[in-house]
Length: 204
Image: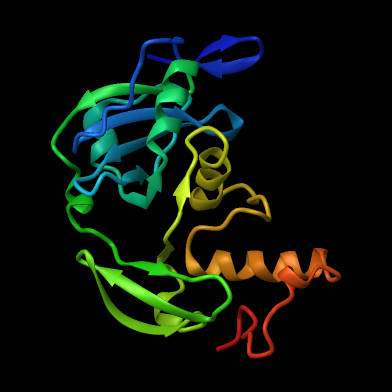
């Protein structure tokens, strides 16, 4: 099953009746930027774990599921349905959950207007710390991503070969850089100003 060029864009078959399947183990192939095909599997927590591999034709399922996990994110369920119907995602089937996806990674809750964050792990808040804490820089900030409008750029950033768009967040380190760039681009807008005790990226 490969990409089908339509109107100059790589697509899977359009399916107007498709609906997102959120059962654990459901495996999807999806088009990202540059017509690369990425893969995501639904976890027991109904997040989607994306694998660190990409292809121009859909790979063998066994090879996909044996690939390292790249990131685990929350995806808006209605957006998966839209992407399936538009031919941007396709369901490959339901399989045993990849080993690494049995582990639920901790996430960071970052309330607006503060540099104090809460670490969530195992379904509950485990501790509080500050945004610049070196131990949390690779952890995902709690957010919901759109399958069509947000994830293609996000997967490019996560894969780390091409230069990522400046506006792509995700892990704490990228979210901090995003805030700094917004402050630089829009210095006259109060809501983008950094607090006085902000610690710049690269410093702890």
